Image 1: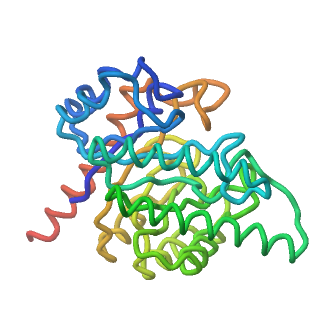
Image 2: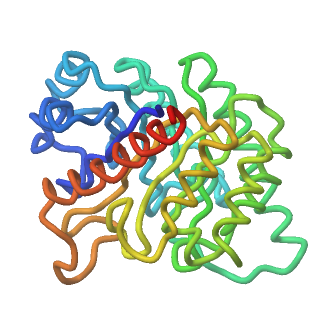
Length: 285
């Protein structure tokens, strides 16, 4: 069974002192992994020790807000972004993180129309930046997973197919595709064929299991059993991570439409563990 994880954003909107105590809590719930939302490139004092003591596997999710953009035409922005992402890698290595995921190629809520020539230049800046980041990531033993985002967050890459092309252009074997069902529900023509095509490529190295309204796996309009069947069929072995948001977080609703954080976390975990238990039962008969 895959490591089943949850992002700390389920409880708090940023990586701060309030996150102390969450690793033990997440492990006690029965999760195998925790994902750190890298709103800051370093952890608050004591959190690293708690993570190591918990025995949880770790992934990192970059927070590519305003001023963080490897595809920006301003060289100083690209340089400071590379410094931020390199610091994230250093933090990840200190707690044994396996992957740094997210829209590492862009950021800042950048949405714009460009002519073909400038679009190509923006793409090349993204490719060049992530290629350099990949070389740094190799030194820290961390893989990179590039996430396509929906149209309201970026215009650089919105679909799994676009990211697979970017991964090919980058040409580094420690760079893969981060598939997120929430964004895919908004941008892919058909969720299941898009996921199957991505998995068939062999380049999916991180997976966010999110309902269409940012709820837990098992909720919403996502055909969850079919999604999970595809992950198993194609031998996806990476983390399956819930990325839900406390009120005030990045993609949280303006009203409380989901269960309280602990209840939401357990709802998702029960579905995921239940799916694998049902599958094991079928295979044993």
